[in-house]
Length: 221
Image (cartoon, rainbow, N blue to C red; front, top):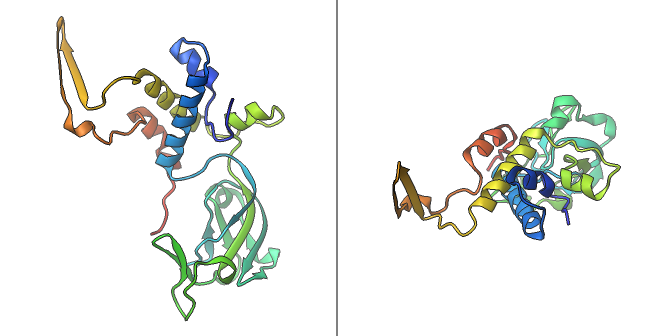
């Protein structure tokens, strides 16, 4: 059964491989989708009512974790709701997952070792109500979500879908193959040898990684 996080469909992968759809193939699609999301450092599937506590850094832009931003329900600083007319997230800002304060800057909080902490003053908490809170809808409609709800239209970029397909195909073809053993052949002659550099090898093929480059999420600290 498809998962909302699936970035491609098992039927697409099956067509590329020339094999029937199976529960095993569906599991590989989910594994490939997780690998792609992990490579990009982000979650792709659309979510509603998402709650985040972003760092403000004393700057006019907030960076949220699930672009594109589809709608912002509200922003709070120190538990006080910021008037909607004081911020915006139009066009390319929404695509990048950014909320801009029209006047002034956001509260001076920063991300340090995964925690949101005040960098000035005496506040030293983990964010939450004492920092900045944003409630919003964001992300792309994935093939997995569309398979579960036919009324939805897939919005996930085709490059990401193709990267997931390529990764799933590689996972399928590498079953039972020792990643630490490499083989080379010339004509009728072949040799296998221990490949020390294979340890920790990415499950995502090079072509897929190139397709994903524009979608990698870079976080400050």
